Image 1 (cartoon, helix red, strand yellow):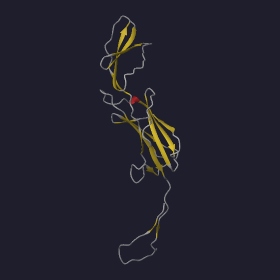
Image 2 (image 1 turned 90 degrees about the vertical axis):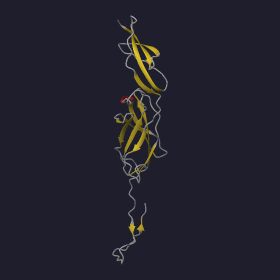
Image 3 (image 1 turned 135 degrees about the vertical axis):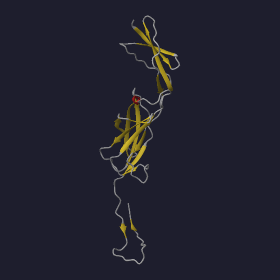
Image 4 (image 1 turned 90 degrees about the horizontal axis):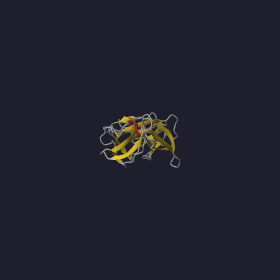
Length: 213
């Protein structure tokens, strides 16, 4: 007997729709709304015989999560002040996604790519500089990728933001903007005002001088 169609059901076994089969495959668009969802199917042949349920597939729809950008080569006073004297820094992108109910982890195939966008100066305009497709899993729900600059960045303010693209080419909103400052200019050499060759009675000696940026 030949297959007639595939019948789709939600996770509770409620019928959704019939889908025609073409050369052994079927495709349709299902909108069950946002949140945790499930989908399963039965095949129907032209004699009216109905198969058992397929394995249920769980997914999460309507995800609003966005990726974060982080400066890995922060050389400032703190590790999080986003100041660096490295003009070919590494920018890390990381996205955390909701784990669909009933699953142990987010499928790596969920993310087609992470896009990194960059602008120079607060008055500049953003442009995409990288499509990152080599992703590293971080636990069960997060993925990261690193963009390493090859060309040197100018000494000034730089801004970054990112989005993720899913397996069906759906694009997220941009995540929070990262603002870094690149400064590779060394400060002026300080001057010590102590006379060379000075001699003192005590062990403790006051040292003074001048230092300017």
